[in-house]
Amino acid sequence: MYPNIQEQAALEAAESLMNEIMSRYDPSHDAFHVQRVRKTALLIASALPAKKPDLLVVELAALLHDVLDKKYVSEAEAADAYTYFLPFFRSLSSEHGLDLISDGRARQVVKVIENVSWTTEKKLGATGKIEEWHNTCVELHCVQDADRLDAIGAFGIMRCAAYSAATNRPLHAPSGRLDTAVQHFYDKLLHIQERLKTEPGKAMGAKRHQFMVDFLNSVQDEYVAEAPKLA
Image (cartoon, rainbow, N blue to C red; front, side, top):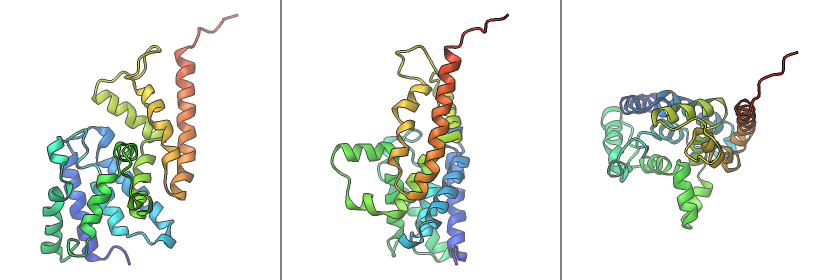
């Protein structure tokens, strides 16, 4: 039965590390975002029993996926994720008897973390560096889809507004401005649905995508609104 005692201790340690680091991030990438991704990634994984995802890899990668987000840490800090997380994995072995280094799962967790990002995937695709692993790793797909689902729909709208506030990005502006929150929907968020990997993720994404479309239609209606004609 997952998680066993050792696995639960590892999850609690990962959650503690995540909370400590991400307490200084803005609300668009905070611990609550991570917990939603964690929950959704496990939900997707549980709906894919035939593919036998490693639930511990899924959950640890989900918990730690934004710790080294390049929007919040330096290039140097994010350059070698495995070295960064190695003390954490060593502590799991020494304190809880769970050796993920020897069985290779520590590297798998870090590899998922390094490849969750939408931007990373785009860069790899543009340079022809997508490998078979990227196309077949079910653990990666569970975490990717969960992270991307939290970028669309109702939470996605709130997160876009939160990040815009944190970076002083305009919410909306006259036509021609490309540095707005609304433009971000057209540049990225409306394209997320077509890049979801799992069938459960695609099913959840359809409703969230339509919610964004309706929201943007309302934004446009309100922006061009005219005063009602009174009798």
